[in-house]
Image (tube, rainbow, N blue to C red; front, side):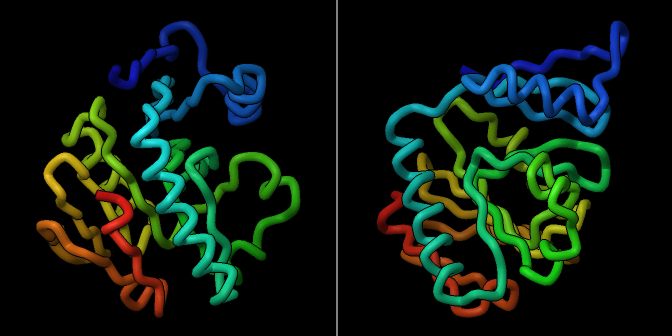
Length: 191
């Protein structure tokens, strides 16, 4: 099942507070919002994708705990990007010094900050084109490094600021490069 997009603008325009409240009132649904205000209803993942996503988050969280220079997030976290979109990457990381510039209320709701690092795991029902567009949106909003993992074809797209996308075939591991120094994502647990 693909994501379903609803254009509400002809009828109403949700404020950030209304969007947050809509998400809180419908916790069994996962919403995102495009930069133009379209409501995107995301389907739940299947068991395999959910397990693999949890493994990705586990590795990122373990490294974050040991490293101490940032804070990691799972797929249920929605970020308010500078372009106005509300997006929930499958895993994300933000430098602690940037995170600490937010006030408590901003941290409690949908943080108005773009992560430094994101991972998107393509599920069988996801559109590759839509996922690639989302990755470009992350870069346009400040992400320094992004990984788009396509389990079906055992490919990883590496998105970096100011560079062309690099696609690797069946890598065993991927490094966090200069953004997450010392982080290595073990893809053998993901394939």
